Amino acid sequence: MSDWLHDPDGFAAMMPEGFEVGVSTAAFQIEGAVREDGRGPSTWDTFMAEPGRILDGSDASVATDHYHRYPEDVALMRELGVDSYRFSLAWPRIQPEGSGPRNKAGIAFYDRLLDELLAAGIRPMATLFHWDMPEPLQHKGGWMTRDTAPRFADFAAIAGEAFGDRIDKWVTINEPATVTLYGYGLGIHAPGATLMFDALLAGHHQLLGHGLAVQALRSVGVSGGIGITNVHSPVEPATNNFAAKQYAKVFDLVHNRIYADPVLLGQYPKFPFLARKEFRALTEVNADDLKIISQPLDFYGLNYYMPHRVAAGTPTDNATPDGVSANGMEDLPFHLAEWPEFESTGFGWPIAPEYFGVMLREFAELYSEKAPPLYITEGGASFNDVVAPDGTIDDSDRVNYLADHMAEAFTGASGIDVRGYYVWTLMDNWEWASGFGERFGLVHVDFATQKRTPKTSFRWLQKVLSARA
Image (cartoon, rainbow, N blue to C red):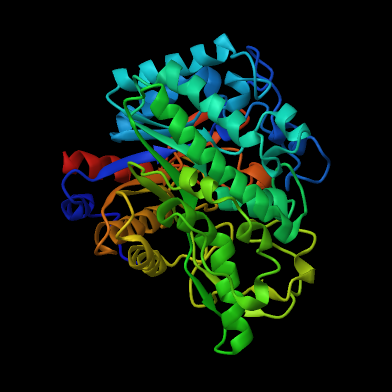
């Protein structure tokens, strides 16, 4: 790792002119207030209430109480000096049933948040779906049901009508790959289904929902740009044997290609002959769906955290990269191998910024002729942050992580237009199935008192952005 902690001015000098720097959050992880002001239940409310689902047994009913403390959080962003804030609109807060009437109190909350951001000079980037589906839609099948896609478009139209004059960029769906794999395939995220490869239909319906949402946003005349975000990871075989290479190709398809190819190229990739049975649901889709999915976008969002290494053979346990177990993984003929050559984050994820550069170059090679401008809509790391006796939090490891990865975003790809980097995340939050155990924030949160304390990484980025200006 490089040591940029003591040279924020030098790092700022590397940043391209006009490069956008922001922070990202998700509604369910920070808002709390799950039973206030007419908000309906989401799939994650149901999931976290089931015993054994959340690693530390916690829930997000309060989270970081952003619903009541948003002025304090916007003030922190203004102090930090970011250009933009990426947040998500909670579908159950705006349209509690997932269809039908809108909730005026929910819309009023986001009105207040948007006005606060704009008054602070911060451009809003809003995500329509960051995993919190209204529970009534899940009762009807959720993303496994085709009718969810037009319901999502209706929600997009409601949001566009309410906020379209103030939002700078719209993300339709965040990480359809994670929703499909973890939510419907392996059961470690809401809604907790264990459909394995049958879950791929949920991925297609999310992409269809994305395309219909793009149409809906444009039909109501939103002024901001429109895109989608997926998590991308370079995938390599653990060994040079034929089986490992084939399984690495399969994992690359499941994690990366079956989402980016339809959106950017208007078609699904070719599937290996030996795996065509597993991908059958995607070989039988309607050609009209692909036309809807592949409409031109104003930008493409890419989240990057780590590379993946795939080995042949059944795993010795059923642990996932998120530190929780998934039934069914022990039945797979391949598993994710370790990266002993790299240091790791609190989650155990390899810290490998050079593979971020690999990912950008692979993306450019596959999509440069079709891709719109690219934003890194999430990047960050969890560490075991310790509060010192004087109240400070020295997270120098996070500083180096962010500096090395942002530097790759500045220089790591030719032939593709990378315009910004959004740090995950503004403040420590409720980290899905891991509960409160993993801290990703630039700001430390005492979950008992809700006290916010900027960490060393916050002060470093603040100096970088100030020097850039």
